[in-house]
Length: 254
Ligand SMILES: Nc1ncnc2c1ncn2[C@@H]1O[C@H](COP(=O)(O)OP(=O)(O)OP(=O)(O)O)[C@@H](O)[C@H]1O
Ligand SMILES: [Mg+2]
Image 1 (cartoon, rainbow, N blue to C red):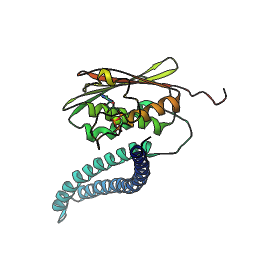
Image 2 (image 1 turned 90 degrees about the vertical axis):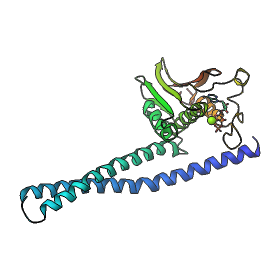
Image 3 (image 1 turned 90 degrees about the horizontal axis):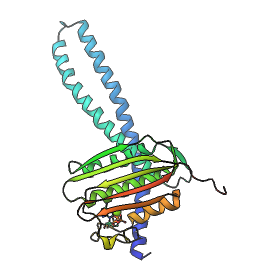
């Protein structure tokens, strides 16, 4: 590994730790706002009920108007805050580092979380379609697999110039789960096909790509989960990456 790549890895690890801290700092106030908002909404409803009891009392008509103006604002606040909470939840799965335990999880949910994080980036530019098969719970390192899906989705998004489409499919194939991410991007040239999984190979300008993404993906899938990764691609048409993960990890020594 070159010094530049090492520096980049170090930067990513530092960013990961920073992110975990930010996630924690943001989720606490967001939860507080959300719970205050519930109290606020209930109080407004109580006020409205009280107005109903004495509709002709002085000032009630004006107070009703004011409450009528506050209610929709509070409702918008709740939606905005729920969005913050959802994004923070998604970030949590990615930011969680250093958990050596295997967990049994719903992989479709894990992919949904990764997709949420790309929303702002893909917004209006890329249409995302999902076709999730019914999957058993998969034994895996969830935060590492989130990183796999995020890297593949980001590559897919970066391969699409202007507008395009990404389709994510999951299915069960015997004792393995197959996740496919297909994009309508520029594709991979034949002469690059055997190099794209190599550490440090990139066709992106300096500052935009380090060429580490797919090598990390390969490492996590093959070494981390005894899975496989493959792709098919046609220049000018698009690329589909396929990740296969065993439903259960072999027990050590078995
Ligand atoms: N979906 C894809 N469509 C077309 N080319 C791709 C796709 N995914 C990867 N590639 C090619 O493989 C190269 C290596 O990808 P990789 O994710 O390892 O690094 P990167 O995206 O260039 O940089 P980084 O991921 O570190 O930001 C890319 O530069 C690109 O040329
Ligand atoms: Mg990449």
